[in-house]
Length: 411
Image (cartoon, rainbow, N blue to C red; front, side):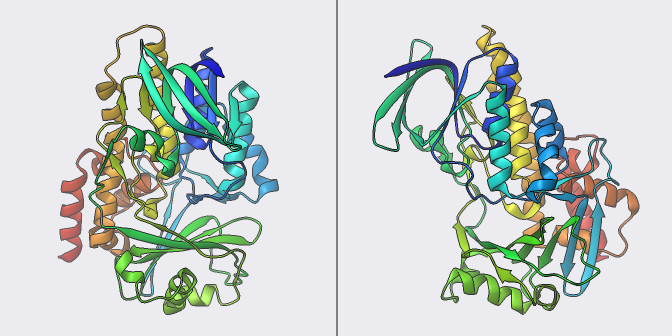
């Protein structure tokens, strides 16, 4: 059986839903093929304020805001960092870059479902339980071969394919596009908890990032939700986890090793088994080619430390769709110049901050008692997701500024 659409989107997560909604607004026929079924678990639960602009652009923000109280989405206005008794916080409303300064911390199972349903209400056809197994390109059309949950084979013919498959990375695998990320192989162990936090100094409006008391390259996230639950995780190179018998031990024994975290979570109870994600950092040789483009994590995923995944995913959709619209209207498009380079500019900014986090340079800046207010606002903009704002000196000259500020912290 063959079905024709202007665009086939692989994956119904945030980038797929946003891209589909935007394309529908321009009058194109869109089908979104999702291998799984919603709701389904995913990490990436602490949104950044910059992504609110993209949700608004795609016409999906009102659905998120209206569902927030009922579904436990937690208002978020910043980040708190802890390291060996030191504490520093950033208020995202006090930042260098103009734009939203608040967002939500969300359970991705319900968040992704809301976005997909909102896109479907706008006219995006979403089909669940559909796995893309191959793509052929001929005569300016792509034939997408799929397998249904019951094993039935189908094919879809379209003018263009957007890969929003996230960690599934469908087109990078099918087209042999993957390349080394350049980061060490790291592992994340995580679960949801009933946190039972009673410490009055704990701010549920902010994500808490804690550096391991002895290892600067190992860190924890604690993302509170409004219903008294939270997402808890530990991240480090795989060698940091080899001495633990189970993922459960890797998470909880590390938590109990940190005095501040063990105090906060002394009454916490797990709500599900500890999960593990290994070798998640990924890159590709190109983000677009003949008849296709990669969105979000399907193209590149850096690291969860700055919660940039959903923001990059939504930014990729909102960057790609206007270019794709012109392509579908018959214009000659330079995908490298008009899509890949602009998107990768911000990703590279995040990349350099990730590198500086793990080697300690950025941690020095964050915890410096001599940090100037203007520098704090510049850092706050990065942490809020505004990694494409070249008016920010930390974006325009990331590497040089990071090195200079790190040296000043040593002086």
